[in-house]
Image (cartoon, rainbow, N blue to C red):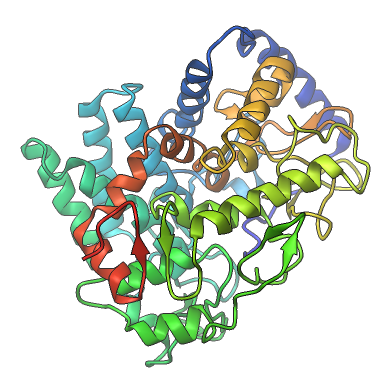
Length: 461
């Protein structure tokens, strides 16, 4: 995964002072009775995570900011930088809020309509949005010098949410049907097949109007990008053929493996992380909408086993704790990309994963967004955080990065891409809401069939 952040370095003194203030606030506001039911606690964390995209949204676009800092310290004054992929997760988080009556349905429709209108006018590059967008102007905010155009993966994460919104409201009242039509138009405007760079049998991540294909990043499995191929195959007007999936994503079927860890089959060769399976966002980002239950194709017999084993390997690694970090346990585990702690105590960023980049930092979203795969183990983390570590909880739920090893270090900050998976994945565990919306969309079913997927849970014509 690309490094999502360009993060300024804070002094240790300033950070500690901020943490002390936030800790006092969190202890007062977020203590939870140990007698609360599991359902009540899941309600609590889902409604907390919703605040990121409802209360703390970028005020002009109403989309998700790249980051939200309770300490009000931002790099490069980026309070109006919105993130495309994280905003897609935010759309699904809002649907959870509506379905659980955390927010009024009519207000959600109004906000989502505003969002659709903003996205319609925002910069697009052959239909794809950029990684970052200025929430005030709709203009691209370069993620890097050459990354100033279309980002197909971030667009896929956004589109996953757009389709769920369309499906949720398409049979509603006149205002809701109008919203669904706007979302449908946005989704159908993405020129997926153009991102094959002139017809190569693989999708490419980036295209820039200034630098063309110079970033040269083909999407090949296995990582977080599977949803990109599913959507590209499902497109009505800009579809890829099955050969692009087979030759591009699956590397002609060579990305499978017989390798195991802790006795659990890895199923595929996770890119540059073949021993443990890499950071846990790989089992989450594509699967907020794509239902892995009973899902298979010619290469992977069970996407459920693939993802569940990935999470269990991470869990077992943290319990084994080969690097002897203080605090790792059955109730405090989960490694994924997030904010992190630099050696000097300042805030950094890392793609945390077993051994390769295990820095003693536990990212709450890793376990919480794995709830469908490991409900018992994930619930233990959820209870531990709210019952025993209120200093790790802020206004929008658990902070992005924590460490018992470093004297209960945390940073009072959130990232959309992390906070946005919590409510949808917990809801998929509870009711399957987002899975049902996405998988029952006729165009998605047709796209999955086209590239050889089968589902025991959902009809694929």
